[in-house]
Image (cartoon, rainbow, N blue to C red; front, side, top):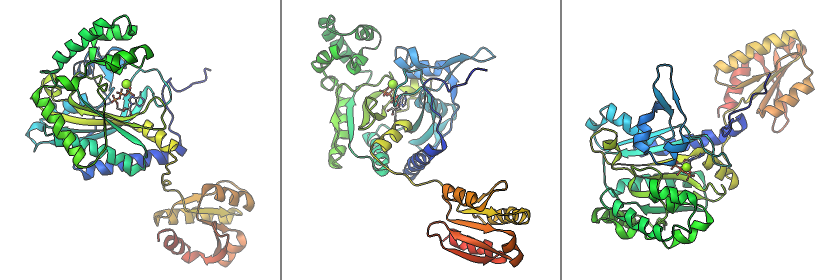
Length: 422
Ligand code: ATP
Ligand code: MG
């Protein structure tokens, strides 16, 4: 038999990791709902053409990273590589335009990208995603930026940096792209092969290149901020004015571009310390052209997606602790077959009364059972032997202090219920 292994680039989230996941999920969902975002759950796969259109051919995601397959009916489907295209598809398909605008939606779940796996970069990862659809006010951009930074602040993150840029719109961006291409033509011998290819397919992406040889060329490249049309410049100025008003620090980063063609105006990322090279814990921005590109009515939108695995890596690197998950508070130990029957009955009665129980299995000595009780982290161990049973009592041991008391079997459920539900 082969020894089966999980697919390259995927994770098993083991029980000991779950307190982090539960905490991060609960925290993000609470903040989103409190701010008026409603949850939407979508299929994990969609038509391949939705992503080809919504994300854009010529992007790394569509060219290289999608998990695409034909189903038995011959339809080309793709495991979602991000949320936004699916959310906008659902907005159009379900006629959400007739609801009061804007519509605020959040989602949480797995996304799939065929990438080169490394720490903080996987082929299946989990995103928390928020979108505001149907409004072009710069304060909507502000809202998603503030909410996501509140998520990190509330989790206890230290040392975050907010990276901000505007990549214009279909009116002003093409002019800038021409200037950028002309500049790169003069430096074509200095840049890497990838950038030479990017110049033809997706020129803005040259700004995002990590190759050493390209760094001086990028540093001296023309900046999109100098080429924005009045509308984009005003939008960006207003957003920055709000951020200054709130004294929220950010870094203007002219190299920040998204791999997604439908992004207009605002783009941002939050970078954290503690995840090495994969420093981005979220990315977001405005996508005023997307709904139309998908055949819907013109609908401005802005959103953000955060990677939960990276959030948890940062929490661990920064030593952030999380509350434990609910666990049994009572261990039931028995000695002998009569007592065994009584502990089975007691376990049932305690569980019905809402008390979490770990029932000892098998026939074992008391010492071994108490050792297990210690490992399970319970508050009380109930010890029942034939002698106690004959007197109608049980010994209850406080596992923290070690004191023992005898409690009548008739009162035991109430006694434990009162002490485990203060
Ligand atoms: P990167 O530049 O790191 O590849 P991206 O620009 O592809 O990120 P987005 O598409 O904006 O990322 O996705 C939003 C967030 O999802 C990222 O900020 C990151 O936290 C997380 N993320 C993206 N790709 C991965 C991955 N392969 N593994 C784990 N997390 C990821
Ligand atoms: Mg990526």
